[in-house]
Length: 289
Image 1 (cartoon, rainbow, N blue to C red):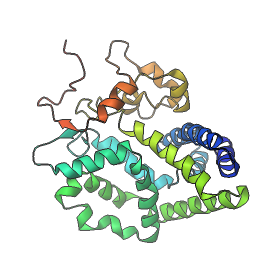
Image 2 (cartoon, rainbow, N blue to C red):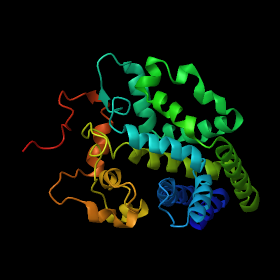
Image 3 (tube, rainbow, N blue to C red):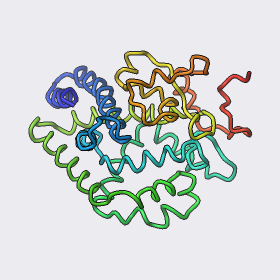
Image 4 (tube, rainbow, N blue to C red):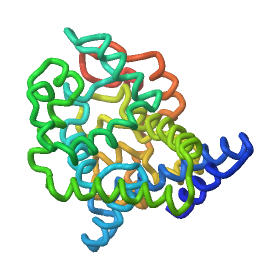
């Protein structure tokens, strides 16, 4: 967190375009470390003391920025519906709205998707009732984009806590601007780089995998330095199979015999767009034995 604040300060005060670019790129990785720790807090495995876990999660959430409770409700919903008909954004199913499919897909790849948690959590703070709108639950578009399941996930969410957490994130971001004398150019460049970097992995670890809630993910191969920044987030199949295992142990759950694609192979394949749904639901990338 201190490193991210230092990079935001540097990006806001430098006169060099190269320093601004370097600060933004490094911020994009270091803030993904924050997000990986935030992800641990969502699963309540960041710290064995629940109070410590929750408060560190809330502070880490401000660096996204979002709310721990808001993001947790959505993330656990993702685990429940992973690779179901609601969450196969990479596959084209019969009767789907193709323009909507492609818009959603490329919003992820270009980093636009990053804006959704901050804006959705802000809207929840102002008016929590919007998640109960029929347009988010009872339409074909809501079904295709998984909005239906995510909206219903907030029926059990702690409304008051989430609204207070969103307020905390806003106050902390305002404090960062005031105390560090940040400007919108430096902040915007850092968060634009983070959005692109963060979003690039958010579906690469699932894209074109099997349609199975537990095995429908990849244990991606990636440069070990990059994997260190992401705290083994690339071992995503191991995480889905063992969601209560902390990141430091995920490497113990890799099958040496399984097919493990490289991150960049999946990433460049994603730019070709969604593909037809395999008839058997198996990944077309895994060699048949």
